[in-house]
Amino acid sequence: MTDYNLIFGAVLLFNIAVTFRASSYYKKYFPSPNDSTKNTSSEETSSVAQSEELAPLSGDSFRDNDKEKGDVDLEHGSDPPADSTAVNAASDNAANIRHAQLLRKYLIVYLLAALSDWLQGPYVYALYDAYGYSQHDIAVLFVAGFGSSMVFGSFIGGMADQCGRRKFIILFAIIYALSCMTKHFKSFSILMNGRLLGGVATSLLFSVFEAWLIGAHASAGLMSHIGKAFSTAQYGNSIIAIVAGQIANKAANHVEFKPFSEGSGFYTGGYLGPFDVSLLALILCGLLASALWDENYGETTADNDDNEKAKSSASGALKKAYHTTISNPDILSCGIISSLFEGSMYIFVFMWTPALTALAKEELGDEFEGLPFGVIFSTFMVCCMAGSSIFSIAMEKLKPEQLAVTVFGVAAFAFAMIVFSASATSSFLAMNLFEMCVGMYFPSMGTMKGMIVPEDKRAAIYNLFRIPLNFIVLFSLLTDLTPRVSFILCGTMMVVATLLQMKLRARIIGGGK
Image (cartoon, rainbow, N blue to C red; front, side, top):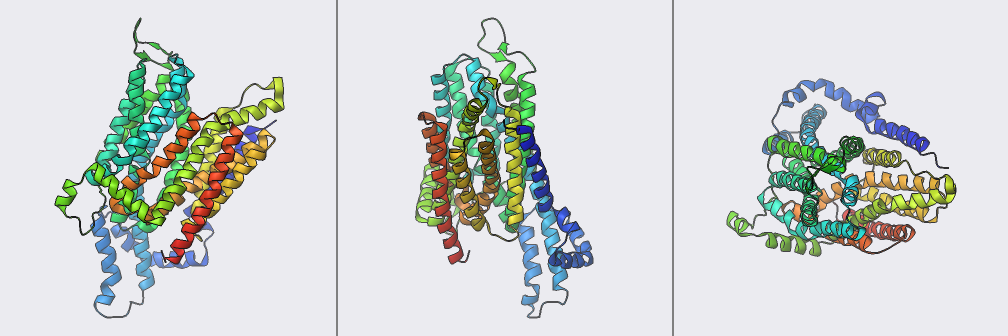
């Protein structure tokens, strides 16, 4: 019999260990020789860093500041000063301070958006079922959501690049809030409209936030910190997922599910509770994005003047993004690899429950009383947190394109373990291994895309990447594959992703990127 609580405890201890190793506290108490040198020089220049701590988050001032510090000696034709190490340390400290300010502003908005999404996920199917819809009708609603994401997402990213990413993040909050409101109506047409709105919102959530973050780092001259930003965001997202599960559970059981009045098609309580909490999170998300974030756009190239930009349309942006993707093998590889990995992740989400349930029933027979889904989900999320910390540790010696090869290879091995496993315990351990790969994947791929995808078409290209992903998800929904066959498919996709990533790594290293 699988002891899920014991595995959760072991994973939690492992996560605490790797999180400490990835933190600044480890470097403080166990410094390397290089860290000791930096600490010595930083003591001499702490006043310089402190003087820049209150500098506003202006990209131009950062670039001008760094340029002046780096070019002043060359401008006068003199040798670097004797205390250049101290100056560099002060510059690093100031950059760390600016990055911390930027990251705080990003996380408070992004994590609210992630909270709104996690709150809804476990209860969408349950709500449709509570309304009395058949499994076929529910499948139609789910397919409509993914289809909407695939269709509308193909051009909405280009609009965000042109009109402003902060505006479209606020639009995300509005659209997703409207989707939450539709859940109160026992009407198939209204619920269908809600799924269509949810598909658009999902496209924005998984593209425009990331595009804004990279654009803000580029404007601030902080691209060297982008890997840390993605790692921190992924770690926070995993924590939010666990918190959301607890909040949603309480909200779903707080008030009885019933119509507002006799014969009314408007319902309240029960499974609608998580959607109401999500609505509040989305309102806060939109307001804070409006108040805290600066606007950023896809940077235009020199041959695109303002008039040409004004004349460009969503379809034109989509065509440009498509042409750029097809003509650049690195961008195309990124898109295929991300679709393969995230597609396998979605299939895993659909299939882990029936897979573990079948194995547990086979082992326990009549003694089977159900799985502790809350403990299992929490274990998965802690593994994601550990994976994001492992990414931070690995980045001390590896580049993201190198680490990604290992991530996809280990993911393929994890799926092979699941396929050939004969017990619930070994399958669950393999699933946790895959979840650690998920925690490493998002910061790795986010950093690679930040280096490879051009800024002026970033959100548009990110949404193009989601088209094959949605095809994979729709295929898994519309076919009656068994869990074992589904995991074989996932493992195959991971093998292909590994081979493509090896070729991408070779091109990046060969190109001197």
